[in-house]
Image 1 (cartoon, helix red, strand yellow):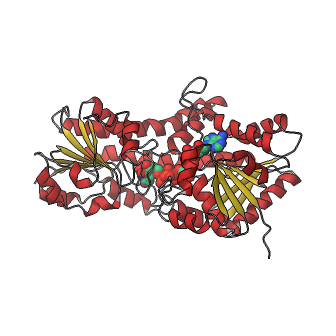
Image 2 (image 1 turned 90 degrees about the horizontal axis):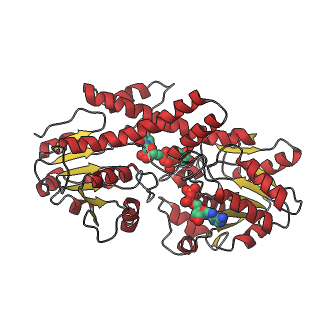
Image 3 (image 1 turned 30 degrees about the horizontal axis):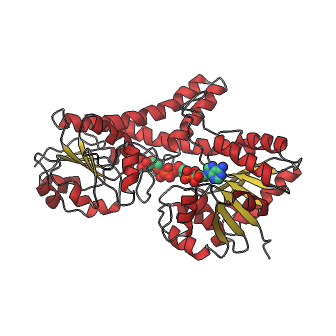
Amino acid sequence: MMTPKINICCIGAGYVGGPTMAMIAAKCPDCRVEVVDLNERRIAAWNSDELPIYEPGLEDLVKAAKGRNLFFTTDVESAVRRADVVFVSVNTPTKTFGLGMDRAADLRFVEAVARTIARSADRPKIIVEKSTIPVRTAELIHTILAHSGNGMRHQVLSNPEFLAEGSAVADLENPDRILIGGESTPEGREAMQVLVDLYAQWVPRDRILTTNLWSSELSKLVANAFLAQRISSINSISALCEATEADVDEVALAIGADSRIGPKFLRASVGFGGSCFQKDVLNLVYLCEHFGLPEAAAYWEQVIQMNDWQKRRFTVRVIRALFNTVAGKAIAIWGFAFKKDTNDTRESPAISICRQLLQERAVLHIYDPKVKPEDIRSALGVGEGDPAVRVAEDALTTVNGAHALLVLTEWDEFRSVNPAQIFQQMMKPAWVFDGRNLLDHQALRTAGFRVEGIGRAPLPGA
Ligand code: UDX
Ligand code: ADP
């Protein structure tokens, strides 16, 4: 069967838009995919050999399609005009001011995009929401298009992205499901079919779900809220384990063996980060409040409070152990990204932990394999010459003269470090606070360290 040629435009060349469009271009050679962004530096980076985001496998994917049927440009309006299908993949941060501050999503970028489409489109388009957005955003897009366009009736679909950073390429190639929401009118169904046929070029049909618009939008928030809730649940248990000498990883293994619970997403940690979880849960809280459901709102809000507490609790343990003061003490920080295999630091637990330690006047020696030094400094609000923060080129140099080593991201390379070698370079007594239970705690203890993991009783030095 010949696949019809489709012109695709994606507005927003970020962590979602870039990888998703690279996969569509790779899997659908008959489509022409243009990724557009207002950010010139970002587009220039996509067009260079050094991509603006790090994802395993992404470079090869982009290289193979770029210039063939995948293009990156800042010319938003022309790309929209050429497109049959316009994906909207712009950022939707939490509002930092005014009504709904700290809870509701800031939709100004979505609104701006809707206005751009209304201005540029000279024929009806299929507009696909990819950004994580609050329920009923499709309506907002629709209203703007209906009032500022030239009477054209565009179709708005919701097609939330479920990829996780660090495994984006694998998730896109082999998704658990593709969700497409649209209107149940003949035109709506026709538009959904276009998207179904696009994904069916590599995703088995039974994994492509179609729903109404609102179910699709809400499902994205709820999926992330359930995942975040699992982490907060196991993290709450980690506190209990530290108090009782149970081991949280053993508890997770034991409960995860129940097929109704399942083993995934039960890794106790220093707290969850990333651009989605906190934002989406807060969004859900806002929605519940908006619809007069304060009990449901309070229930979900607790997921965030537990996460904040987990990050604070970790820092307090460090300070307490170091004789109640870290002022002037060097502390090595391994990992700054919110998880391994990404250079993304949005909402990374490392940010709040480092900021709290800086308030206590600690001196931080930070290393992350993929986050750029300037991004670390800007996340912490410090300048290049600030003596309180030194960003190192490798893991080993951070520990020199440090009183404690904190593991905040679970990068694989940290596992291969020799405990005796780092112990020797550190002040004594030397501590490891393993916020990811990544390292071999017994081996560290044998080397002489005092070790504190998440959800385990502390190991005193040997
Ligand atoms: C998440 C969802 O998984 C994805 O489906 C959605 O599209 C976007 O949000 P992402 O934020 O990229 O993806 O990463 P994820 O793997 O979910 O991790 C989020 C945070 O939770 C990280 O900080 C991670 O370290 C933490 N985490 C995850 C835990 O602390 N324990 C776990 O068991 C799993
Ligand atoms: P995500 O993780 O959701 O992909 P990012 O912040 O990485 O979020 O990417 C969103 C991108 O959308 C940014 O590169 C931003 O410049 C771009 N963007 C925001 N508003 C517009 C707009 N009106 N037109 C084009 N691009 C936009």
